[in-house]
Picture 1 (cartoon, rainbow, N blue to C red):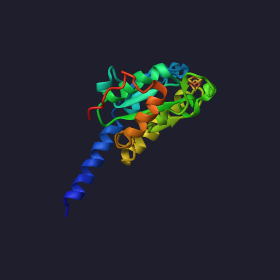
Picture 2: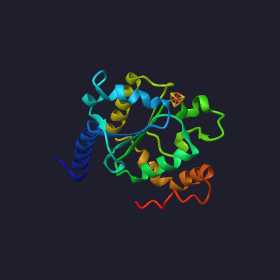
Picture 3: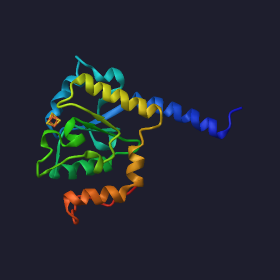
Length: 183
Ligand code: SF4
C-alpha cells in the first residue's frame, strides 16, 4: 500500500532524477581554471551528454561553478549571484584555490576557503583541473543530488548568520553589496 510518506519518496526520486540530468551551469570565471570550461562543454568532452549545459543568467541556473581564486572584490559579486539563483541550487568549487587558497594561499586580497562564504556542494581538486576531472566532479554532484545529499543551499539558509559574519569580515561591516536575503 502506498501511503503519503512513500508517495513523497517516489516524487523525490523522480524529481532528483530529473534534476541530476538537467544541470544548467553558470560559470563564474574568476581564475585561470576557467580556460578548461570551453573544452569541457564543446565537442571533444561534450558535457551536455551528461545533461550539463550553460545558463545565461543566475535565475536560470542550477549550478554556480566558481573556477578558481576569488579576490575580496569578486567575492561580493559571487555572493550576489548565488543569492539571485532559485532553489534547488548547487555550488561547485573548481581548483585548489577554492579549497585552500592554492598558490595564492598567502595573498593579501584573496579568500582562501570558499566554503566559509558560500556553501560548496562539491570541490574539484587540481591546478587547474582537466576536463575529465570537471566531468567527474559533476558526476559526483549528480550522485549527491540523486541521493538527496546536495543540501548546500539548505545549509546556507540555516547558517546564514555564520556565513554573513564571515562575508563581512572580508567585505567590511557596512558593505552595500550584501542585501538582505529575501527567501
Ligand atoms: S587552482 Fe590553479 S588554475 Fe585554478 S585559479 Fe588557482 S592558480 Fe589558477
